Amino acid sequence: MSDSAVLYPAETNSGTVTSYVPLTTTWTPSPECFTKYRLDGPSLMAFDPAYGLDVETGVLCGPPAMTTWWEQGLLGDHGSYATRISIGPMSCPDNWSTLASSTKDSSSVLEMCCPSGFYLGDAVPGSVAGNCLSKVSSGMTLTYGSTANDDSSSWSMATTTMTSSSTVGAIGIVGWNIKYPSTATATSTTSATTTTPSTSVTSQNSNSSSPSSLDTGAKIGIGVGIGVGAIGVIALLTALYLFRRRKQRTAAEPDQSLSHYYSQPPAMSVHQARYQPQYPAELDAPKLLPVQPAELSSRN
Image (cartoon, rainbow, N blue to C red):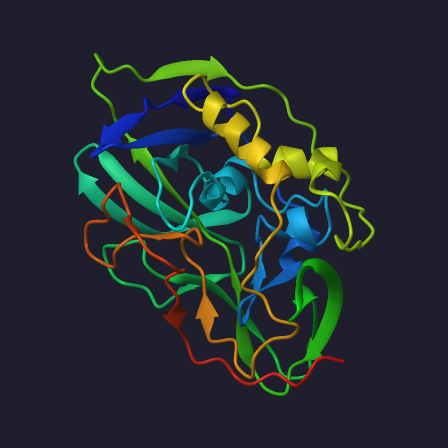
């Protein structure tokens, strides 16, 4: 793909500004990302942008634009947002596929990408509702990052052995592709080159580390300079992260069933309707979609 990215202009609706971050340059995930799980509530999730921020700093299992979009909740307070971030334009990363789409009109399409080997569960035809899922078999041992119930800032690695077949999730990427009229203000820019940290990373915990001690990989994960309209948003997002201590929704080990998955950023969700509005409704908690996975044994 070309390193020249088209920049969509920011839009304002009812006092809320939506800024777009492009995902158009080639990004190839490391094979290890398919087994880098993070415990999100009761669910084991691969390709979670927060994995490289909390569990193994420097591990990038998603392009920077994905991390910026997924972690945009840092810009708000108590579910109230004056600024929102959407991905657009979007091309799926290497070894990812478009598994769902929703057409707004003749010029705007919202699409959802899932990693290779994952299928779309809980799909709603004509929408981007659904979850990226992958089957796991009885007897498989899964390793994941988790926190203790009483300390959501200290991460460590744990394992669980499957007692029957089940599913695990992956964070899907949702973004817009819009055809602007020739008179529109969409512009092109040449993106800066970003060096991805080595994929050979030793597992490390984030306990007792200062928020200001993030390494380069974690800072890159929040976002890089990707356009005139988005630079201010990314800079603010990065600054907020440096003061952040997660008040996380995680538990010490998976619940008896991996029954929920995230298909949208934790503080936001799009409606399960034929047309997915560009300005998602605000929720106080993530919108979780039920599935029927098998039980897991307790952590080893």
